[in-house]
Length: 436
Image (spheres, rainbow, N blue to C red):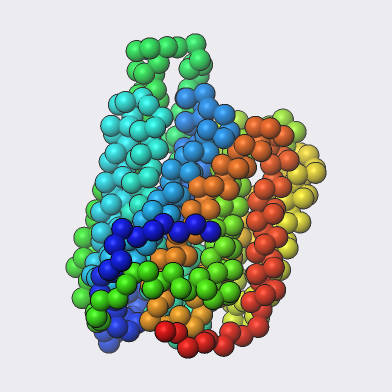
């Protein structure tokens, strides 16, 4: 996969060793990290209800509507490496504050976006919001792995991801009521000029109010993290080239895992993005927009349930084997959904969330095994791969425009096939080589 070239060959100081919580602070630090997972998961899943809203208001094709995800997940490509450098310079807790403040700024940008009535301004607001989420995720993923025994890192990250799924379950349901429940009864194609601009501003006002409330909540959380910034002991080390991080891609296991993060996030986001329109199809469930939107939480809720179950299974079975099984089941469900009609077609698509549950944390920990003090660097590169959420949904949207929504499910199916292979490849215990 492509990786952005840094603007400088000199990085900020690295952390000399993995950060450790001060005595008695592990539980409180884990609580903060769980809160971060909850917030950035919930905000990300709101895209699934914003897409049909903007598709309707701006009369977009499926491919054009998927630009919402492209703008959002492009941030991971451009911001992940700089975010890792910020972690190395100022530490995990302070970097989390930077991310939360950036997220709040992105939420507030929805105000001028609504006033402009231009689709591109919404994309800009989403990019800034996602930049903050990227920074927070570069912090959260490795940090939760470090707050406990290395042997249970995969299980612990899966448990933390369950809080991410709790956010993705609750936020879309509320969003469906607030945002999709107000879908316009006026056909925007019958308007033009100032009348069309005024109509779009009025119809997007509820979106603005939603994101203003989120900005306030994010500011409060940022302040709370700042007050607790000294609970983690972090020690800087001499400066080193940021280009050194890229040699991690020479390790086959890490490189394969990076590709699978790209494919997994892309597939998961693509499916979540089409659920509302898919369930509205006459040959599926024929629902209205708001009712279909209320079903989105079932997709993400399945991931939440699966992560609690998976946290236990990953203590009993090889993570690679669990990953391979989950990927195989998603492929089966995609085939069933794409070749059937009615309730079976709709519910089999929603059920994919259950098997998505353990994929991201398992791929992440399998790829990062043995990185030691270079875990922050690895996390930055893996978060770059989340740009798959910008590309795979766009390809799925193009496929939907050409061959229909059902046939477009072949795109995520190919992604899951590669993840199945990675699970088989990484099923055995990893023996870390010596790093330079």
